[in-house]
Length: 477
Image (cartoon, rainbow, N blue to C red):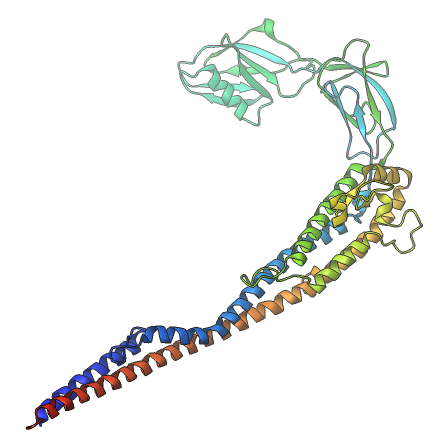
């Protein structure tokens, strides 16, 4: 038996074991059945899949909670908007009175209530426009200056460079907000200066001078301006402006054109009243948001979970949202405390699900609980009993917004759920991270164990081969 041969064989076996050990330590699932013939990668993969399942379960749970929180946050935001829209219906400004002023010829004479006044005098007024107010004008021929020029108009000066064109002067005048005139260039190249204010001028007006003699007045084209002439209930008046504020107390009229002879416009001033259009706009804003909220909540409550996607159906049959939906619907028909029968609920002022009567068919939106505003019912109630409508909205909006805010306001029930779920997501993330780290250690350990197994088998096989060769070399073998 040769000692050196044994040593050499043993050294080779140790090297094989070393390489397997290094492969296992350096990366996962890289060894194969070098000695055993086993598919060690597959064995490790299948065993690790078993250990991975609890991690997958936690990941699915985390995904589900995260998805639920996203949906809850969206519903919370929608509910907060709904509560705000409900509160807006109890604002005192919504029922402030205002006067409607109308004109039968708004393109020729427009009229509005003067906002700063104590109120317009109620009635109908016949107003005719004989002529509109116009601006005073002076016209000048223009010669391009050979040297720098200074043009002074009513004490305000602009500078012109040598060789300037008439449009250069017009641009300089119109860009100067201290000027009291506008400037325009005619097709013949003349410059026309017109007062920025309308009305007939007396005495001197639009005084113009220049140092280089670029301007030469055309005196026959001078125009002192014109006052507006109008009739009010057959009496004739004049105004320097086409905007008249002192003819009808509390009313501002704007003259846009001349009325036909004998056909004055009628300016109607209505008594002070609550603006039905403002309240209708606020009600429709609420109704639209209400329908969106209940639709979105119903979608979440009816979406069933699936085994394939943990993010689906996370709020299916959620008891808190179901109870809130029931309470919101009930509130629409709950009478306000102390209010009289017939003017105590939202349905009394035209807000309902639009349910039909008699043999009429129910609409799908009515079956879903969507609200509608019956404008005829509302306007009739507002006209006959505006204070009653205000009492209904005040009482209802306070109760409804309180109901919603108890669920959706910051720190309320839904917010508490979201915060608790956020903590759970964080905790699950920590558990998942720890378990993944443990799985990595477990996998590395399996790789090492199989590497050691292969090394041991390889050593045994080498030893057996050596013994076999030694026996075969014995005399008489």
